[in-house]
Amino acid sequence: MNSHAPAPVPGDDRDWTFVITDGCDECGFRPFAPAETARRLSDGTGRWRAVLERPDVAQRPSDRVWSALEYACHVRDMVRLLGERVKAMRDQEDPEFADWDGDAKAVELAYWAADPGTTWEDLERSTRRTVTVLESVPAEDLGRAGHRSDGVAFTIASLSQYIGHEMEHHLHDVRG
Ligand SMILES: [Zn+2]
Image 1 (cartoon, rainbow, N blue to C red):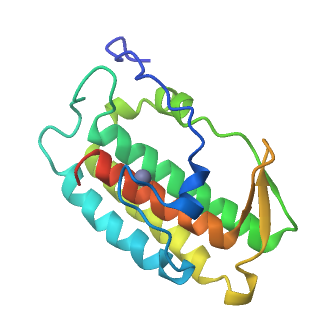
Image 2: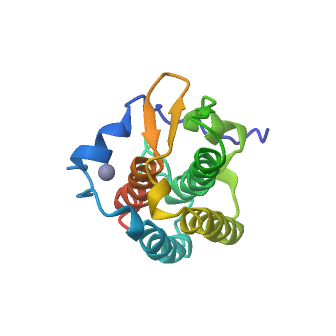
């Protein structure tokens, strides 16, 4: 690990699953039709491209807030992870999802030191892969189930909302 690594920002322990049914007042997200997920994700990725071209992309607004670059890395990894979960729900009966600690991942993968250009390419690839999985799910399978290790249950339809929110909430965080 590079000795210039900044202190981790304080973690976010909130359970964000409420956005699936209630939307999110913080970013203005409202639940949408699952069929729109692919387009919403693709639109969001285009907005991240502009964010990642900012000259100050790696600069944290404060010690307690991720830089836009760190948020982009988080979205890249979340979109990939959630796409893998949709694939598991499509292919297996009620799979269990392993724990994922986004704050620990940020430290482990040194999000703060990522290359913005590579991050953009990887985010675009993550999104494309997840969109391909979503588009492979027939409408009658949107109710297929999966659950987190803490017991919280999802369907492919509800997880689609969660992915869309992940993409758009963090664009709101960075004013992208
Ligand atoms: Zn939000």
